[in-house]
Image 1 (cartoon, helix red, strand yellow):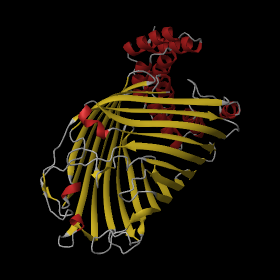
Image 2 (cartoon, rainbow, N blue to C red):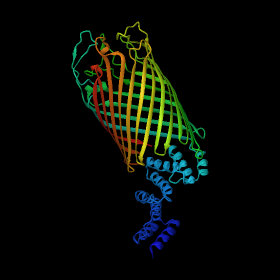
Image 3 (tube, one colour):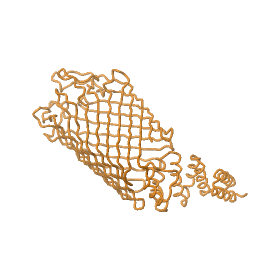
Image 4 (cartoon, rainbow, N blue to C red):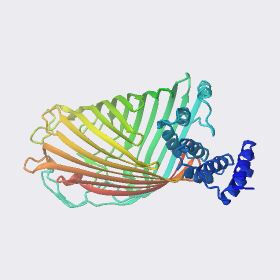
Length: 510
């Protein structure tokens, strides 16, 4: 048989559902000199049908060189990635097909595929748009989403102790303080469960629970243990129109959270004592309130809104002011996607924290009980730009300016400039890599170091970095490695410290 005959025989066997036999003929055609993008495309589809996902990906990638086959190859790469359990890669390929202009039929199929994956209802093959609409009307009545993570980590500075000896000018005796940095091992744990009832076609009602905590192994480090329980219930609405590209999402919920940690002295890690009374429970709080998030998208443009109102109820201590306060947030953003590989987002947020039993500082740095209660108002303006370099690699940069206003006399006003960078790289179907870094510079026009008018104005800057690598062991089980670095620099020695953590954990999610 000639190379062409081998190829035609392979096509016939494929149409008869004999995929392994077809793959044999395609290989014989290739060995006989038939080396074309169409052969690689057919070989990739046959390998996909035969559940040979690595080989299917290799062949379909070679078919991308053909302009006439590129969109179909991308679509089948999406199907193949999802069948192999790599939903992230599947979404990347489907989004490329959705955003192209050459084949509207495949673009519609890709929109349906993306929607199915978002609903966690995806199947191995994507059916016609009309079939998808019928399927959506037959969604299962209830959904349960479970996620858990157990990790082991090392902490170089458990109590965030200052790294240098300093004079405590806030104490009338002005003692020389020698902080003791302590390191140790700890176990971060996380668990979340969400139960949703799909009462309507595009809307569901849910209840959710979340736990996050960290527990240190050494008894002398137990004061650094902390955890938070959070319970929320509400509704979610999502309506995506595949034909027009419009997407509407609405989330509303009422959330209650309980947070526990020890109010310790960073210099030595001991619980704080004031006037002979232990106040280690001072930072425990109960937080509750409603939140609303709305997003509307029209092809290249998207706008969003978030509104939050919360009450933070801290433990009563008696000998020192409490941190009880009200918190309000109003946040809006606009996003524009220039091309399928680049976008920009502009954000604006107005928020406020209003304390009920915490006196403000006056312009002399004194916190007199006769001063008005603290009220801080914040205005945040930011811009985020993201650029995709390849299908597997993208990066983003961001800038945000925060203006905090102290509503009493302006002593604690500041302007914060924040610069950020992030990079995401999907290495094959199983490895993911993420790196992010932030630098924040605070400018205090009135606040003094140690609140002492005899000292210079307070300086404060923060640097953060995080590197995360993830390996997907099975469809639901992941191995995560994370490294964190945090550095605070200030002429107020009480708040200057350096810390790094390394965490290795196992994550399970549906």
